Length: 483
Image (cartoon, rainbow, N blue to C red; front, side):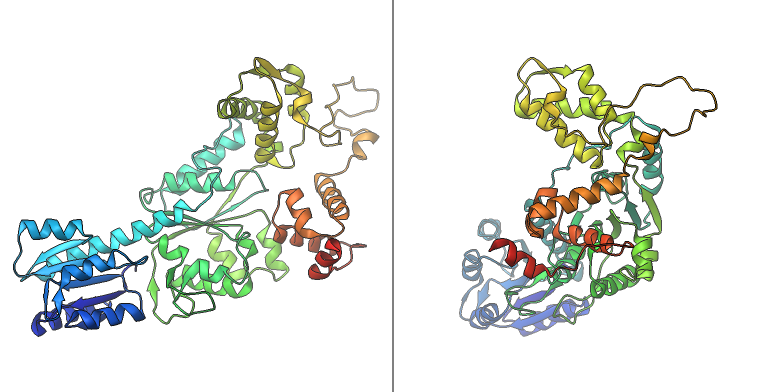
């Protein structure tokens, strides 16, 4: 509900009481006063969303208040009421910032139309304010790929998008889970309503409840004004809960109630707010395992997992690597103003043989770096990729004749000794952490992951049989590394 608190400034007792009653019946919080002095006193103590203001008042003119409100950082919408309306008066009020202009006597239907307009306008303004601060590097990018897994994914998106079902998108980091969520939104009946994204891993744990549900003025230190949460901003639209596995158990319980009842209370508030949102959640972890470890509520998992979508890693659609590489090359050549002729055959072979543990995001970064390091009218070469010779990007051996007693699928001793992708990732994380002398903040920056993700991975490694990884206190490690 974008509009909650309303002031009725009207000296006529009958009109004031009648309008106050109409608004209270619609469940608004209404303060009714008869003069400018009382209105100024209310505005000095609290913030209001909407005001109905009479022009002629005992201690002044309502248009004076309208002009004063324009000087405030946070100002309510103002609906001017008058029994002596004229075109000149209406134009003057609108120029001074009035939202609407009503001529008395007005009907209940006119009030209803004005309130609907004010609700829609207020939500639009707040969504735009949120989106103006939102950083989104993937905005506008499509799901690219010609492989069978990608075509199957697009077919599933088309089928699910037209429904109202809650969707859980799972996949490794860098596979494009947010792009899947945006595709679901764009193809849904809610495509013209807000799309609000919450990065659960990037928000401090003590603030995530306020980000989800909002807070009232004075709810905690620093809450100097009322603030709507992301669920309220997404009303009638779609909310994306990115990396949902990172939220705390207490927030999980409150999120479960929103999914079940479609209602919430702000932090520090008592008002129950109804919300109509479609929920899409993403995670790079297997939530089933988190449920088994008691890290994630089972009932919340069932609520989120109505329609599961698994995004395939790039190694499972290797035929898309060259297609994506050429697409990224053209995009970054335009972005950086570099005339690239193409990708050399040796470079294509290197790209095709790489294992891509970072998936599409890694490929995107590799190609951008290669374009920047190349010269005009040049081809991208292996030297531009910046690959480190590891088991994950060694050239694929050519096919050899099968000897006597050997089966075509038999693995050679060298293949059997190759480490798994998870082993390579683990070794790399521990090596970076060692070089950073245990400073997880620095290590997370080098690894390009959040500190919370790094902590979760280290916790997983500690639980492995025979693990020698010690439990290190975060604060002690940070202070020791900075000494």
